[in-house]
Amino acid sequence: MGKRRLARRVLVVEDEADVRRFACRVLELEGYSVLEAVDGDEALRLAVEEQPSLVLLDLRLPKRDGWSVLEEMRRNPVLTSIPVIVFSASAGAPHRQRALGMGAVDYLVKPLSADDLRKAVDRVMHRRR
Image (cartoon, rainbow, N blue to C red; front, top):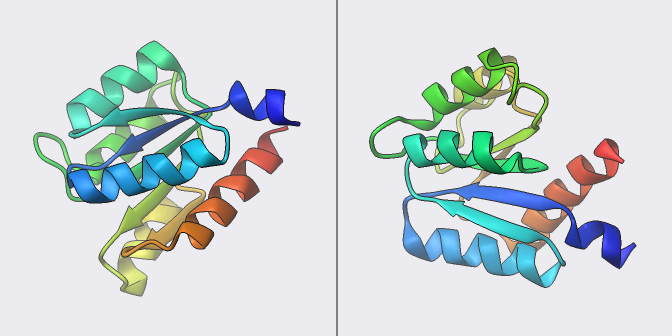
């Protein structure tokens, strides 16, 4: 199972360096290969070029926000099958419902705990096998 996980890549899209480093470290400790993007434009470029197994997407981003990234990923035939977990400081139900309605597979509220992040990513990766 360890070898299979090493082949799994997660794209973490977060402009706040501390949050991004935390998420990347948690995922790396779980054996995932991690890509990083700090804005929406970089996220879409990396998603197309690298075809990650999963995208962890913040909503508040410079250049192109997470809503726009999610919308583009669901419209683009190259990206539409890549699952997206949205994570945001917005805990309100309307944001959660909108993200899930747009095709996100999960919605996590920041600040993230390592345990919640691991469980959410593992659920999605398990479904993809």
